[in-house]
Length: 145
Image (cartoon, rainbow, N blue to C red; front, side, top):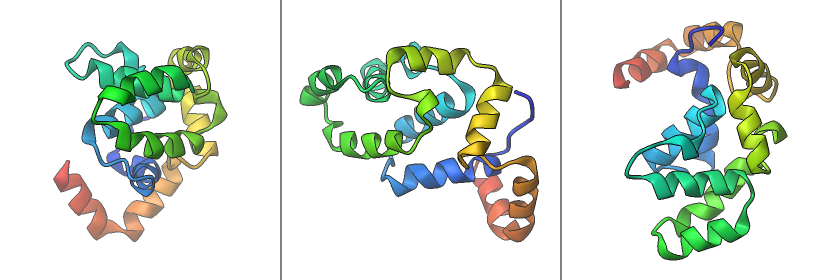
């Protein structure tokens, strides 16, 4: 990473996740890791494998795979929220499996530029201003992590 990110720098991304009703913590962490750090959701080797595959299929806009997985999973309620969230992401990071692979192989500097341009990540200056303006909220946020 070109700079060390605090949880505060991610406030816009967290707000976007909340705005679209994505409350499942596994979804939130998986999407945050993908968007900010370029970690492919599908690369996880964990019990939630199918849920991570589901997120990858949503990002890739693979409707057949999404329908197949959502049909028997309890995550069908999340489909609408996930698609709305993905629609608000920059076009560089969704739309096909190839775009997902490219996003994951990009440099941290490139990803930071795209995220800052699309206001998903606070710039260093914005982060400082935000921290000073909302110091009490910042302290509470830091304590909760």
